Amino acid sequence: MQKCIELAKQAEGQTSPNPLVGCVILDKYGNEISTGYHHKYGDNHAERDALLNLRNGEEKGGTLIVNLEPCSHYGKTPPCADLIIERGIKKVVIGMRDVNPIVGGNGIRKLKNAGIEVIENVLEDECKILNEVFIKNITKNEVFVALKTATTLDGKIAAQNGSSKWITSDKAREEVKKIRNRYDAILTTSSTILADNPTMAHRKKIILDRELKTNLEAPIYKEGEIYLFNASLDMFEGGINFIKAPVKDEKLDLKFVLKKAYELGIKSILVESGGHLNGEILKYADKIYHFIAPKITGDNSCLSCFDFRKIDNINDSFNFKIAQIDTFEPDILLTYYPISK
Ligand code: AOF
Ligand code: ZN
Image (cartoon, rainbow, N blue to C red; front, top):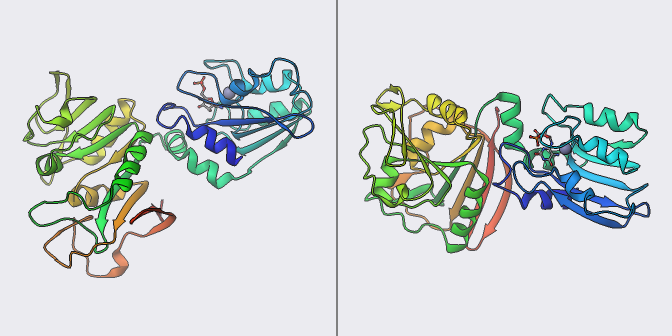
């Protein structure tokens, strides 16, 4: 199953809105004879990809391992469950049931009815994390919101003058590129563009610029599909989608932005911005990637990574569960999830 997860991850960023799926096939003696994965949206499902490598029937009586329940529906391809049955597989090991209601349990039922032994929930937690975007999209019909920040040990993202290059190391910044690739779009604000003038290479970019203060010639606008949310214009011009959003307390309505992005087919977003937007979006965030560099500014006037309110009591904090700690020398990456979600 771990291998299925690794195979599936090779297609990160390519399968949206469909899930990441990997598959391993063993012959009746338990020897691995084929692997496959869902390469990109519209391509063969992982099970089909793995089975189509086998032409001599060596899978007969064997085992198929896959991180998501095999499908039972006629979609872009015929049902994987049917192909598994046709090929004489005797045992199917599954990471998680499909949350897609057109499959949900039907794939497993089909396999069992054909006399196949089915083992469920193997590395279920890992399989659910692998497809956390797909799960949120299908079960809540909402965009998945991840946030990335890079701070000093005392939670600062820049000096008072805005200087922030570079808090974290090259290795950490390379990892950020990989993280970005997992998400359908990045989201940033006019403040970040005006302060850092970043490129943020990505295929889709959501930019929040209420008063249209940024220079449309800035590098960030030079590549990718641009969705420029603002308070006044609704039009498509110069390759840019200007989208008018309601304003609340002098800020663009984030709920509207996220809903609109989802309607536009954006299933997941990585927010990369400053402390104000990070703070405001916290209540919508599904996951945080927090890089920490072993530096201390010791200066309270430096900009903080989450900066949007005053609280009187520590019990009013947002609470998280740290899921993973990685090292990108000399920095670390904490990956955490909100507890109440
Ligand atoms: C995939 N890849 O490897 C598996 C999937 O749009 P379709 O017709 O390809 O069907 C997509 C659904 O198929 C998807 O939502 C999920 O429920 C199921 N399994 N999908 O894209 C795969 N195994
Ligand atoms: Zn399938």
